[in-house]
Structures are given as C-alpha cells and as structure tokens.
Length: 418
Image (cartoon, rainbow, N blue to C red; front, side):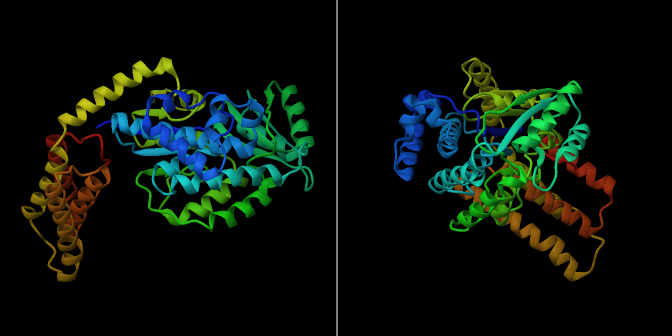
C-alpha cells in the first residue's frame, strides 16, 4: 500500500489564471469557486482567472484565492483517483488548506478566516517598516548568529522560514533585515529580497496573531480525517483542540518546512503531490528529501507521470480489496488462539476483552456496510492485538512471529512499524 502526502502551497504561488482549467473541466471545481464567491461577496473567480496581478497579490486577496484554488484541486484529485493520503501539509497559508481538506474547518469558514487573516497581517505593521529576504549558501547557526548581532529591542530580525537546508528566510524590521543581508553577502551568502507587504512569521506580527486568535474563536472545528502537520511544531495535530493555538502561533513563529518534510520521510511516505498553484513545494521536496518522488497537480508536464503512478496505485487498491477485512479477522482469530498467562480479571477485561469487542464490532459494521477498513481502523486492530499480547504475557519473539504472519498474508508489511 503506497503512502501519499498531499502538499498545499502558501502565499507567493499565485498567478493570473490559476484554477481556470480545473474550473472549465470539472463541476467539482466550479462548485468550490462559486462557493468562495458567495462566502466573500465578490467575484474571486474573475480575479483569479482574468484579474490584475497587483490586485491578486494583495495579501487579503491572495490568501482566499490560493486557498480556493488548492481546495478545488484537492476535490478534483479525490474525485478522479479516490486515493486517500496519509498526511497533509501546507506551507504557512497552506496549513489552512490542509486543515480544510482534512475536514477540520468547513470551506466556507476557512475562506472567511483567511480573508481576515490576510487583512490582519497587512495591517499589523505599517508599509515599509518590515522586510523579508531569502538566504542561501550559509548554515543555519551562522545565520542565527548574524540575526542576533544586528537585532536589538527596537530593531529585530529573525529566521522565519526554514524551507530547506540551503534556503532560509529572514524577517523583521527592514533596517535589521538589510543590515543582516549585507553581513551575509560579505560572507559569501546569496541574498534575495522578497517582494512582500509585511515581515511575516516574526514577532512583529503579534498584533495580527492577537486578532486572528479572536477571529478563530468565532468558529467551530471538527476532528481531522487525515493527519495534518503543523508549521509551528513540524508534527501532526493531535485533535481539533490544537487548531486555534497552532494557527495563532504560526503567525509569529518560523515555518518549519524542512523538519516537516523530514518527518514525512521518517514515516515512510512514498510520494508527494502538490495541490494548488505552481510547483514551489514540489521543488522544495526534491531539495529536502530527494528520495520521495514529488509531482504537481498544477504542472501539465507532471500530469502523465502522475496519471501513471496513481493509476497503478488504483489497480493495486482494487487488487487489495478484502485484505483489510482479512487483517481484522486474523487479528481477532489470533486473540482467541493465543494462550493466557495473566489471571488478573481486571487487567484481562481492560487489556483483552474490551479492545477485542471494539474491533469485533468494527468488523461487523464494515461487513454490514460492504466497506473496507481505513488505515486508521487497521492500526486500531493492530493496537488491539498488541494490547492482548501484553496483557496475556506473550513473549516478544512470538509476538513478532504472529504479526509477521498476519502482515505477510494480507500484504500490509510496509504499513506498520513493529
């Protein structure tokens, strides 16, 4: 079973015409743009397809525009291929896209939130006070040291985007960003000033963070269908309760993109697909984790390879039908035929009876609905069997042997880390 990560771009990826082909070819995409227009009260679609780039690049317009194009791409992807991801990750603004596509935030709410987020960020620091620059050719510790040397209480510059080992963005007061840039140039670094309207992901954005937190408290949130990686922690969200905290922290904290991609690598991701305008995250994946193939849904040159890979995965999915239920059945059967050396009734009830009954009920419901278990349900079954083994006092060697048999017969050897 292939493990896919879906990536969602942030501000800077916008261009006139983004999402237009999806809109023209898929009713699903048309519904997304039409819903965005209705939620915002103006023609976002026209701005994206035929508008003025300067107007589109305004932060309060860019953010809902990229979110809309990204969600449209996600829904078309799921409609065409129906291959579920294991993880979702979005760069800065893209984290909102990831949370929306994971079902944690409704699209209508998300589009309003990011419209206001853009406005809050724009208004947090007067025009010309802040700046950002992309730095390459210098290691992180030297960069941090330079930022500390040129910063003081009233003139601050910090690391704001850890995009890759060879690209880090600095952000802060324009005078400090310029001073750091000059020092870094003399040490051989390549410095590219960014055309942005504010010093994003720096402490200067605290007024925007405060306003965003108040805004976020006005909405309700749902549990995540798939794991979403937080920019602020470079780890998956652990439930909907962290949404307001993480999204508020993200405004003033660095985007830990390099760490996030290394996390995906550690979890055995086989393929990454960028859903949204441009190919920024596809290119960053190649620099961060060259071993994970990355393709862009917005790049025509990538589509043939994407079609082939997803088609092959779809065939594998068809061939694997029934194997998920087989894994559940084998786990349940293993419980019954495993000896017990623990005669503590309370421990046995908690560690064996309760988890067994939960998975038994899950299996019966799936069979009644004619459905295969999800990855999370498969993991629940495996955790159930682990609990049984621990409670019954089964030696590790025997546990490993029994799990090996189950995974080999069902084809899930690469899904679980034992």
